[in-house]
Image (cartoon, rainbow, N blue to C red; front, top):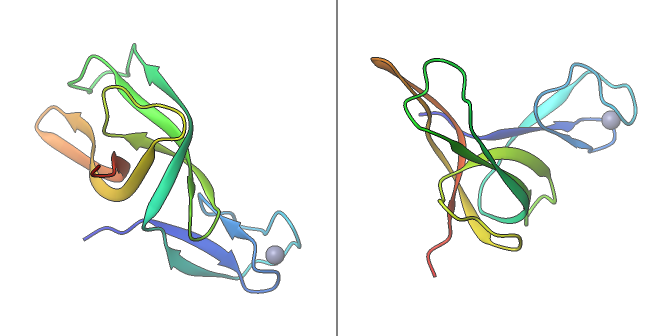
Length: 114
Ligand SMILES: [Zn+2]
């Protein structure tokens, strides 16, 4: 089972995602993994057409979301046909790429149940 992780600097507490080798705030190189979970808010989103070869969908939706608990802002795929700014979403791990005979799992958020 895959989980969504962020990486917290052991020196200054700065959260990073994706993983950085060196803390962008203090230069430290040690991090602890923290699970990214819970509610997130959509800050902005976009539909991406002209996907690279291997995708089985005509387009994918990507969103920039901010996780409520950690305040971390990440770019994720969103499993929603019509996302909107301010939408509440929940983190999940899902199929982000439906390849030919092979699925890829990664970060994805789903609209929260209303
Ligand atoms: Zn740091």
